[in-house]
Image (cartoon, rainbow, N blue to C red; front, side, top):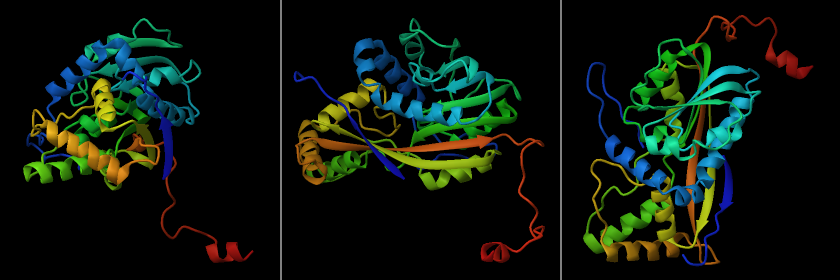
Length: 320
């Protein structure tokens, strides 16, 4: 695991995954309509939302690097949950000819539609839980910081696998379970102190140990999973919460409380600084990023040798 610290400067004025048995309706954790409205509202504040692109741009760059490592030129790549367009900032015409940006928020798709793109771009309003693509139609699918809002993550991965052509690749990144643990614990302690109970103010997220199993369960092979951490320093808890809202990453859990009491917030900010604060008075926010790669099975893919087929002992090789 690697940790990266991003410095985000402010002006002076200022889960576990959810699934269900076959044939049953998926268990609902997130309100998808609320999430769409949050993303619409965030993207409509154009200049404000652009100032908080730092995190999603950084993760998108790392997703694009992983796609670039695949020595293959794709005709068309789908960016699932593209938001305002973060992956597109880090691609070039040697990687693909066309990028299809898909997001549930039309406002997010339109925010930077007038910006330069090195490849042909198509924008579609698509819900990540209901993909419209035909089976065996896509060469590659990428998803950067979007699928942690999907209610049925295994089902979404199965849809991605079905849409891919044989030997097609999926490259994704989503927030892991340790994301914003400082904020989560501070709010919980403040609520216990002031209100004698806790409510879900930070969304539940998938644990890194589950991702490889989910990829295999979805029918993807040659899977790769790695975990990264990005730490961003903020003046206080309140600037962190403002940025999350401007990113469209505020809470969308169905059982969330509509408001947090003012004295609870003040207590949480004090606890945050006391437990996690930096020597310079700022507070860190940790974002755990889980990166994943999976391929749709194909007869042309390399396969492991059958057990017992070795013709030479590893012991003899090491001794030589």
